[in-house]
Every structure is written in structure tokens, then in C-alpha cells.
Length: 276
Image 1 (cartoon, rainbow, N blue to C red):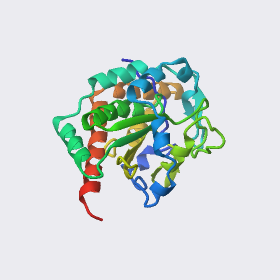
Image 2 (image 1 turned 180 degrees about the vertical axis):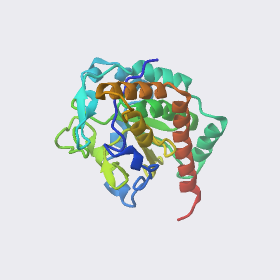
Image 3 (image 1 turned 120 degrees about the vertical axis):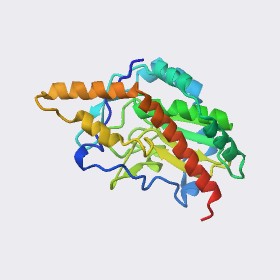
Image 4 (image 1 turned 90 degrees about the vertical axis):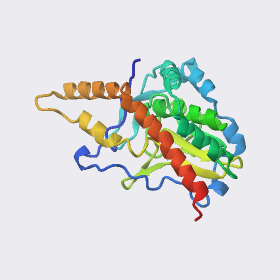
């Protein structure tokens, strides 16, 4: 398998030596989220199933959209030619299996009153986090009988700012993104994947954004991208990218995919059983 990825520097240009494991502050449903949400039943129905999304990933329509190239100094993305990641998504789906405990957990949760029934995902296939988590989410939806719908984040042009303006790029889904911004370490920006779990009546139960808490990506990527003694800038970039690609093919990528599912299941159990 070939993984191609040139994602954001750690914590959007923070010094990795000063980073601590990311907190998940701000990632959770707000009390008034249902009344104001742009995710209506009609909007949700417009998303793609996983099979449709995989086919779309290799389509001329998708490949004509900008992919991720690098970042501006303020954290906005710079576009480049998009790669066909449909085979990667298929392979990750084929190799992904829920554990017996995970399968039993989602079935139990789905059977509860006001349990999870729908999963909304905002994804871009150039993202390693999306390629890792979206196939696992498809398995989760299948095991629990949940309805999964996947939306692009961007339209033809990649998001060039940390915070989207839906009016500037109406061909994307930036209004959904704006409702579910990533918030950590005092900052707020658009990340993928965005995963939102709903009841059958679109009551928000949980949101999961970017990667599981156990995966200290900012710290790891910061180390990979830091210069080693005697390296030129080009050598540092090449080595850092090589290490990142190797990591995506390692068992640890599967560990983090499973951890994301565990994190979601645990949060849903807490939501449904702990009275607030």
C-alpha cells in the first residue's frame, strides 16, 4: 500500500517540545445545538454512503478538486493536485474488523431508548485521519445498524483559512464545519474528520474530531519534522515525510483506528447512562 500525506505541522506550527497531549475541550454537543443545527434530516440524506464515498474518491469529479499540498503560516491550506485514494479506503475497510466487545457495545447502545442511530462524517480523502477512521466508522455503523452519511468538507478549492466562510465557497459544506470546529489548546479551526453521532430524531449525542486522544499526533509529527544534526532543510522534509508514511502503514495506525472507536463507544455509554 502507498500512503501519500503532507499534513499540517504539529498543532499548526507550535513547537513540539512544548506540546502536551491534546485535550478535548470544546468537543461536545452544545445545549442549543439541535435548534440551531444546519444538519436537518433533509441535509443528512444528501450525504454519501461509505460505498458511494469510496467510488466518489476515484471519480473525475473528486480528482478535479484541490487536494492538500501544504500550509500557510496562519494555518490555512495550500492546494495541489489531488490523488486517487479510493484503493487505500477499500484496503483499510477490508482489513478493519471491530472487536467482539466493540460490536457488542454498539449493538447495546443502539438498542437503548434514544440510542445512536445516525453518524454524520465530514471527510477529505487526502487526510490520513480520514483514511484511518472513516472505514472503521463504516464497520461501526454496519455492526450497530446505524445510518452513515459522508460529506466533503470543501468544494473545488481547498479551505485556505483556519475558519471557513460558507458564503465564500458555497460548493462546500463549510456551514456544517463551522458548527463543529476543532477546539484545543486555546485555538479553534476546521479539522477533518468531523464525526457526529445522533439519535433517530437528530438529537446530538457525541462529536469526535480529527483523531483519538490517545494518538498524540501533534507531538509525534513535531518530532518527525524536526531537523536532525547535519540535515539540510530538504533532507529533514524528506525524512519526516518518509517516517509519516511508514507510520501510516504500521500496526499503530490500526491501534489508533480502534482507539477512535473505543473513544466514541465510551462517550456514548456515558451519555446514555449518566444522568446530568
